[in-house]
Image (cartoon, rainbow, N blue to C red; front, top):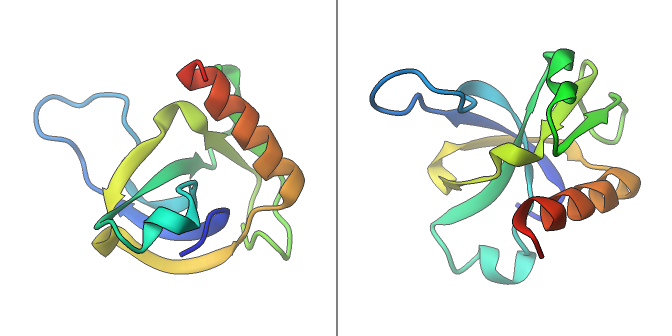
Length: 115
């Protein structure tokens, strides 16, 4: 998987009481650099949701579906849900995030992490 790939993933429910983490089968963006990806058993992803009201939260990006990204409906990129997942949870590549969205994602990740 390469940075900017949109992949189908399976996010398990966390142990304990239900929280606000994204769970279930859904698309996500690979955000980890290609240089380190092959040397680690995990990869960093940002999940997407089709619940468009999520755009009300800070650190989100609205994404229109396109042939390039492979999304079937408008979605919201949940940058504030940035997380590491085991590579065994990766399913298949759906598409590739367009450059202008990837640039927005970089800005939001820097802002979220204070970089």
